[in-house]
Amino acid sequence: MSIKICHITTAHTRNDCRIFEKECVSLANFGFDVTYLIADGFGNEIKKNVNIIDIGEYSANRMMRFANKTRKLYFHARLINAHIYHFHDPDFIPFALKLVRLKKAVIYDVHEDVPRQILQKLYIPKILRPTFSKMYELYENNSSKKFSFIITSTPYIRNRFQKINSNSIDICNFALLEDTISSPDWKSRENSVCYLGGISKIRGIFELVETLKYLECTLHLAGNFESEEVKNEIQRADTWRKVKYYGYCGKEQIQTILGKSKVGLVLLHPTDNYIFSFPIKLFEYMANGIPIIASRFPLWQNIIEENNCGICVDPENPKEIAAAIKYLLDNDSVAEEMGNNGQKAVINRYNWGEEELKLLKLYQQVT
Image (tube, rainbow, N blue to C red; front, side, top):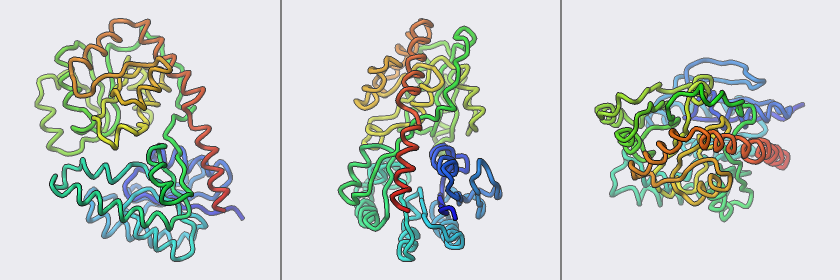
């Protein structure tokens, strides 16, 4: 009988790149019986040998999600009676601890450094954020001691958890080799740049749109805004006319956007949560053969400069960002070479292959 695994998310989508495309699909390919338990309202399906079970429509309201959906997810998780439970969201921790008390193997997949993330949450009054951050970190640390394994998305977060639970490893969000596409002829690309991902002040949307004052190009923008307030404010900018906004995009539409753009942008602000992160979009740009303009964080700078695949800038300086974009748009041969360099780096190093083997080894230890 194959080992039964249940991945659980309260907040991510059924097609989430890290959870579904990488972890669930990889484990199914290794012969595990994989169930992905979600709450998005789109129904059950079997996809890529993964059994997706949907317990109902996703709620964006955090309190409603915790009170209703999280409890329902726990109820269905118990019915599945898996050998290993692998959960991905902090609000499931209380129920993950219940699974531990039922003598189940439980893996906590830490996507973000949440205590540092709390310090930037706009919906929490600024004066309360340090207290909430410390309280949450204490709770998360005490809980994590009881889990079978901790998986983190970066070495930085891993180092934090290794002090708490020695069974902690990093499995990074490197690109899938299947997403490493042959780059279109450079001349067929538009005079355009792109940003893919969550759209918020701290992710640099205001500086990015201001940058367009100094440029004659199109910005392809895909993702969800952090709030309607930010969306309405940014759309009042004079330069919004240079933006083509797609909203949330699926994998095929993202590939189309990447295929016609000449530069990929990742201009997150210098917070502790971002400085030590490995944003998936960084490696998606590289995999698709386009140069990167990224925040000048030492971790990112090492990758980009070592592989000569982009330019690092001050993410809070629109004129510096604009100068870097203009340089690449005006110098096709340089931009194309950087794009090719980034794609080679993904093929040779920054791909899911090694991370997949780490995941398999971890599961072999748990079982």
